[in-house]
Length: 298
Image: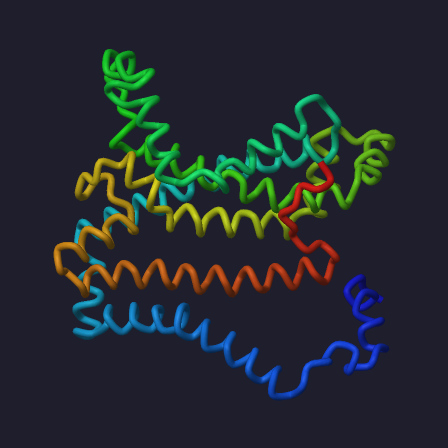
């Protein structure tokens, strides 16, 4: 019997009346309100995006996506997402390993720092990088003297994106690794396995679905980030505009088809992310590894 079946067996034994105490009309109204809310605020906006993007036909749609400025924004978005996901993957695994497997001074503070981007506005995080790397910033003079460009260039966009996305992998892994404990790793080490062998043969197989879950969320946020990137990018056309920034620029210039065409790519990313997220959650549920974002154990 799987863990999921063991958890759901008491529910199957219990009478359905124990969980459905509301009268039929009340349940109908609650469900209708939920469906109506989702339809108005989620489904209809998505329909409008795709309808507007295709309002002048598929020819105009693909022509808008083939524009040099659009291709540049797509390439930059993919590159920044790859950099952010790669570094956050490395950081998330290391941070989750340290927090879940070891006790050390400042552990609670480290968890708090990991959660910081959830509570700080992306615009504020972008301004922090301006204060650090701008012409009048803390390191601005030194960077200018050495002809190093951080702001209004790819490094600044990557740094801002990394900052707003780095909690996702770590927060997906920390509760999972805490629940699994250290017994299997200790057993592997006692049998003579090295640290890397223990990680790749014991730890990684146990966290692979949670790791993919965190990477998925991190990638979706990186590709859709607007606030922090808007502050540090400089909006240089064809160079530092990511897809979300280009959507705003084209819309403000009344290029609606082109704007919604780029927006439709981001919407498709959101839909794909939703489907894959659902699949991963079911896989994690089957293994009793539902991701949780709580820090009550710390």
